[in-house]
Image (cartoon, rainbow, N blue to C red):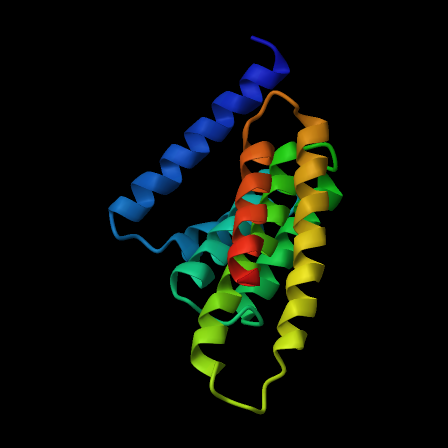
Length: 166
């Protein structure tokens, strides 16, 4: 077994562990906190904790400026800093930006009749996050061209941006 196979096997075990924890109503935040406290230089734990946080924020329909998104970004950027050649971290960074874009839909439905909001501010944010996500997905693809995740995520990104432009 080579190093790449070993890493893939470990990722699979980690994902299974988190699934089991969530199915048994244990608090994933506590486990992630313990993991990143114990292994502060482990890019996989940091990145997956970041992903967990932004998915929680998205599923709870919180604002794009929520602390969950901010902490997720910190964790993912640290994961990239520690292991800059890992494609998954760039994919997670791109997905974080995609989730922020998607969260704007919730904001727009809440404020669409409020004249104090300037929709162009949202347009600027969407463009900023779209470019960041696009760059992150391209970095992911560059590091692992065989993985379908970067390509699929790019399609999702463009689809979401087109929907918001209507």
